[in-house]
Each structure stands twice: as C-alpha cells, then as structure tokens.
Length: 434
Ligand code: MEV
Image (cartoon, rainbow, N blue to C red; front, side):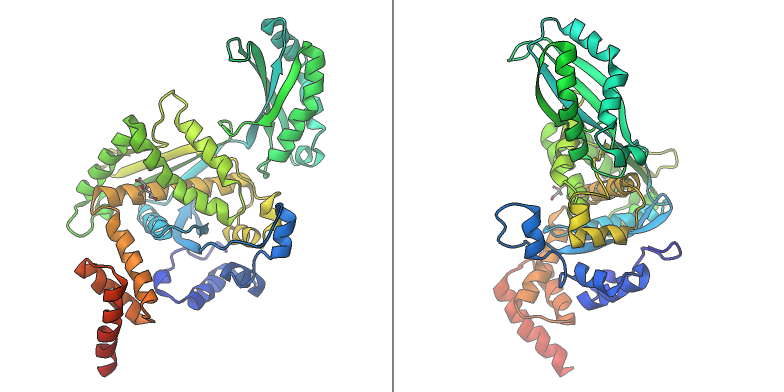
C-alpha cells in the first residue's frame, strides 16, 4: 500500500462486505479487477484449477479476510488471510494494534538459503568419500549453478556443500550431502530438487557409492525469519484485568509451552493459525512451512515453544518469534492463482524476505492473541461472540439486528438457533416500533 496510507482502518470489522472492499480500494489503489478477485466474484476458475492439479472437478472456497493495523519495520501493511476459523483475523488485527503502540514489529530474515539432500549408499569408507566430495566442492557448486540461470542471474544459486556422515542407520552406513542454495524470491522447491538430481550422478562417480534420495529438506534452518515486538504494559489492561496481570499471565502461559510438548504443540498451532492463513492467501506451500516450523521447534531434542516472551526493564511485555520460512513471491501458485497474485499485490512486498518478515510478524501477533485470551477471560468468550453473530444471521437477523441479537445471546449464555429466532422477532419488533 502507498507509504502515506495507514493500515489502521478503525471500524473495518463493522462494515458490510461492499463497504470493506470500498475501504480497501481507497487505501490500496487496487484496480477493479483485483477487487473482484479478492471479493470471490472473480478468482480461480475451474479451467485454471484444471492446470494446477490432477483429476480436477472444481474449486474450493475459503473466507478471505484482511488483518488491519500491522506496522512491520515501519511499513504499513494490510494482511490477507484465508482461513475457516473464527477469531484468527480479529485476534491478529487487535494484537497488531497493541504492538503499534510499542512501535510496531521489528522483523529480519536470513538469505533465502534452502537445503537439498542427496543420500549416498553402498560406500566402502564414509571418511574417504566425504573428503573426495569436499575436494570437489567448487566443481559441484558450479554444476548446481547451471541448473537455473534465472536464479543465478538474480544473484542466487549454489552457496555451499556440506557432507554429513551417518554411520549407524537401519539401512547401514551412509552419507548425506547437503547442497545449500539461495533461491532468492522463489520458494525454490523445483530448483533445488532439480539441482539435487543433477548433482547425484557426479557424486556417484566421485564417491563410488549409489545416490538414492534427492530431495529438499523442509527443515529450512538456513532460511529463518524473526520478528520482535514490545507492548507497553498499560496497553494490555482491559476490563477487570490490569496491564501487569495480563503481562504476567502471558508469560506464565508461555512458560508451560517452553517445558511441556503437550502445551507447546497447541501454542505453536496458534502461531501457525496466523502464518498458514497468510500462506494460503498468497498461494504458498503451507505444509512445507508447517513441517519446518515443528522440526525447528524440536531442534534441541525437546519439542518446545517457537516464541519467547519476557518483561523488559521498563516493565513492558516483549516477544520474539523465530522460525524457518521457506516462502516465495514468484513461481508456483503465487504466479497462477489469481487470488494469490492479488493478495501479494495487496501486500506490496518487493522480495520473499520482506514477505517472510510480515508472515513471521503475523505469527507473533497470533501467538499474543491466543496467550492474552487464555491468560485472562479464556478463549471461548471471543469465539462465542463470533459464533453468536453467525447464529443470529442464520436466524434471519440483518443489519444492526445481527449485533443486537448476538450480544443478547452471549449475555444470556445460550447461543442457540431457537433462542436467536425468538430474539430476531422480539428485538426486531422493538426496533421497528421505536
Ligand atoms: C486455536 O486454534 C489456537 C489456540 O489453541 C492456540 C493456543 O492455545 O495458544 C487458542
């Protein structure tokens, strides 16, 4: 979005669908075709889908929402999120608002270095084979560079070759060669898989072994993104909860995820709620990122929290999230899926690294939203409010009646369709007779 525009769109949630699209058009300078795509009236056709996967019979829709309030490295960003779960977009938006009051998210990323693995079996001596490969490293890297001239012209390409000895496996001793390759703005799966396949015969000649698997690793631990945030303690206060109580409650909740894999799995799932939603909206491979995230969370040998939360010297809450983010803004579905293309246009990112920095910030915001809710009123209240709105609509409420009926359902503690139908009659009548 243009630099002079803010991602603060107060009351965005209360607008109608049409009004939200109009608001978006005003702040983002999207053309009408892009807006039609985002609205769901355009988007992926069955014919386009037919070229993407096999045995296509149609397409599958998901709600597409916009998370507001994000300020990442000083840049205002509106974040497209495709997800079926209630409260995720609202949670990210609200936490981004709190984080803004502490200066927004500060994010960074490493180079886009992916790892391809080549497994070598039937070796006489692992040590000798390893030395042989390392002696010919430059030659092998040059060969890998020939695979994708476009990426090398963009400044990417083969960066390093590592050889790991695995003397004791269920299939006997083996080597695994890691080709480290900078895929720049592409996720790069095809490129590094091709590079791994291209190197395999040379590696066989050099080692006398048999190359077996040739495939990327989803534990992309050389392609990391990191986001940090600070929330002034006072900003955390709400209702009966003081800022200190919310802050300390968040840290206590995080502490359980640090030591307990049962909690860490749920804690990290909350982070991935935000991350996956942006990845789906932009046509990125969310399964790859999921795999990398959970493997990274277990890198010490104990599965643990991906995030860290602490109190700084001023008594404010600070948080950090670091994780592998193998994401792209060119190639794959990002190029062919109309909604993915438009979502990336909306984000206005210039590189895969900038994109990863936004994605990791959304993950941190989502984690904060979950911890804040869990540490205070519990997660169900927010869910119930949204659920009540859906029930009110299902009961026939329209316009301002939706909020009125939903509020009454929550206040009464019974969110049922029968009660909602009664309320639509009674509250609706009151409204009309006034
Ligand atoms: C629900 O989709 C996500 C949470 O369970 C995350 C968490 O517990 O931290 C609320």
